Image (cartoon, rainbow, N blue to C red; front, side):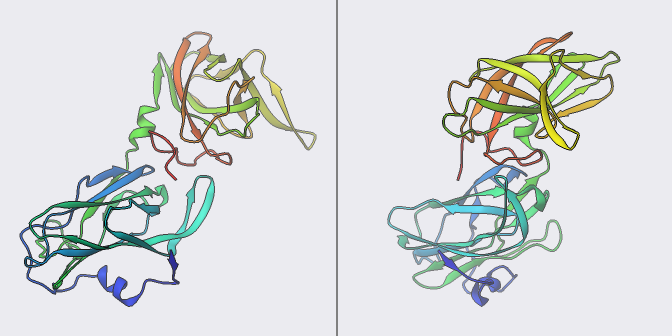
Length: 322
């Protein structure tokens, strides 16, 4: 990886609307999946269906736009892949840490894709919530044995026709993973259960979630089960005489009517006792919550990083990605 303080002139030019250096072809470089939710991992599959006026494609350079964090290219047989690193436009939260720079460009080169063949070039990136939901152009420069196509033009108005459009990713506001993590049980709405990864040999872990009581009567969380633990207790951390203390709530935690209660690090939380195996980031571990009125409710806990905090994005479904 080559580090640089800012994008070089050639790369900077690639992100601006420019005239084609070759006659436009009928097909464009496009994204296989053109929409993904903010706060998720995105697999960008760039589809290349032609060369330059019949000339084979020999290199492809993609500029990683701001908001796509921790980009990683997929190796490609017969091609050399190189990355360029540089600063982001701002700091982003990523796996409990603040990141300020990363991969800003990826180039595959050294291969030969004939004009009458089709191929794909792939990378993954995290769609940072701080960047928000918006359309994001992903400029691509396609180099051929003779000439090149610069797929870098960005529409200034909806519906504008472009000769050489950059592939556009539409980042949506809805987080499908978060929506799937919402569970309803009677008047209760349970959202985003999660836990932290644990080091080897650890025998306890914390459980965190949000519970909203939409009813008119109080409810009480009394405990539950966790697939990796021998026992689940309801705990509270609080300052007592200037000292942080933790105690078990033997009678459980009240969820008042019309109120939301957060179980989060440093406050109310579940304690998973006597772990039988460590928790690994990216896993999903099943369990139940027990309420006085609603009874047992099935939930699934997303396991985040060792230093994860409330509000950090959940890892993508399907496992650890970095």
